[in-house]
Length: 574
Image 1 (cartoon, rainbow, N blue to C red):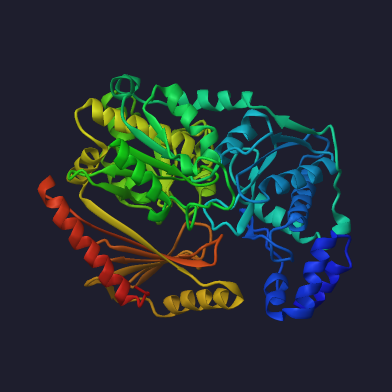
Image 2: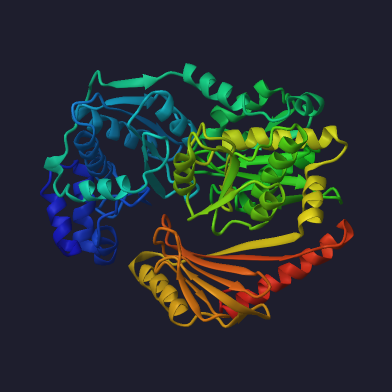
C-alpha cells in the first residue's frame, strides 16, 4: 500500500477520534509528513520496536504497541501449548511509557497470559531480573534507552531474561508481521490476570546486587568516598541511591535538578550519559562538593557515564571503552589478589569494544569471548556456557556493563555499585580511579578509542546509510593512519579477507551489517549502521605500549591525533 492508502486504512479502523483527526489533517495538508509516518510499518525488529512517538504505522503509539504485543502473545501461546504463561512488564520515565506498558498488559491479558506489571517506573535491568525470579516466559520494557525525547520503544525478552535471540526473534517478527488489522488484536480493559509488582520486590534485586561485592573490606575502609549521582530524569533514582546506601556509601549527593523523572528531559539536549552536556550539572555539583566520582545513568538505567578527577584535579569524562576496561581490570586483579580468580571464569565483550580487555584477560589466563554488538549476544554466550563456566563481567563500548549473570542485559544499577566499590578500593590504597587507570595503561599499553556517529533521518537517510556501507564494501581502504590494511572483516557476508596472504575465510558469527578494517599495526576501524536509530557509527581503536607512566599523556595525545587523521582519510565530517 502507498502511504495515502495506508492512512485511509487506518481511518477506516476503530481508532480514537484524536488520531483520526491528525491523520485526516496530514492527508489534506501535509503529504510529506504523511509519507514519513505511513511509508512503512514500524518494524518489530530483533530487539522490538523503537521510533518517534505519534500517529501512523511508522510511529510509536498504542496501536503499533498493541499489534506488536499481539504478535508476541501469539508466539507465546503457540510455543508453550497447554502451559500457564506469564510475562513481566516494566517502563521508564518517557512520555507515554506507562500508557504503552498498560496497553501491552491489556493485550497479553486478552490472550489469557498472566502479567506481572511493575506498579511504577523501574530500571530495565530489574525487568530482566524479574523475568527469571518470577518464572516468566517473556518480558517487555517500554523504553527508548538514551534516544531523544521524541522517541519511545518496546524491548522484548525471553525466559532467560535476555532480549530475544534466534530463533525466537525471527519467529516473533513473523507473528507480528501477520497482524494486519486492528480487529486481530485481543485486548481487555480490566483483568485479574494483571498483577502489580510491589515495591517489596526492589529489596530482592538490591540484595542480589549487594551479594556481588568483590572486596567488602575495601568498601568498609573507603566507604566515605564522595560520590555525585544523576539519574538524568530517569528510573535510576528509584534504586541506585538506595543500593549505594545499603552497600555502605553514605556520602552520596544527588543532582536534584535531574532527580525527578520527566520524559521531556528538560535539563539536557539528549538524556545520554555518553554526551558531555548530560553530565554538565553533575560536574558542577562534583566541583562544589569536591567529589571523587560522578556517575550518571540514562532514562532506563542500563547505561552509566562516569567522570573522575585526573592528576591535575580536573574532572574528565571516561568513555565507554575506558570504563569497561577499568571495570574488567579491577575484577581481574581483585579476584587474583583474593584468590577467587578461576580458570572456569570468563569475560564477554562485543567486537567493537576495546581489545585492551582481550589483552588483560589473556594476561590473567581468563577467556574473553567476543560477540556482535548488543547485550543479547553477550547473554547468548552466558546461556551457552551456563553450568560449565562462570561469567564474571563484560560489556560494550556504549556505556553498558554486566557484573554477573543475575541480569541478562546491561545493568547500570549493578555497574554503579561496582564503580563505587572500585573508587573505595582505590582510596583505601591511597589512590584514585585515575591512578588505577594509569596503572592499567602502564601494564597493558595505552589504548585510545573513539566513536563517530552520523545521523541521517528519514527515508532518504536510510538509503544514504545503505549506500555508504555499499561503497566501503566495494572499495575498502588500502591503508589507515599510515598503516596498511591487512584484514577486512565483513560480518554481513560472514567473511574475513586476509590481504597479506590473499586468503578469504568464513567468520563464525551471525550475519550482521558490520565492516571492520584491521591494519598492520593493529589499528581497528569498524563501521556499523545503528539498529535502533537513524545513524551510522564508526568505531576507532589504536594503541601503543609505554615504558612508564610518564609517557602515558604524550602517547595518548599522539593516538588522538592519529584517530583524527584516520577520520579525514575516511572522509568523515569533522
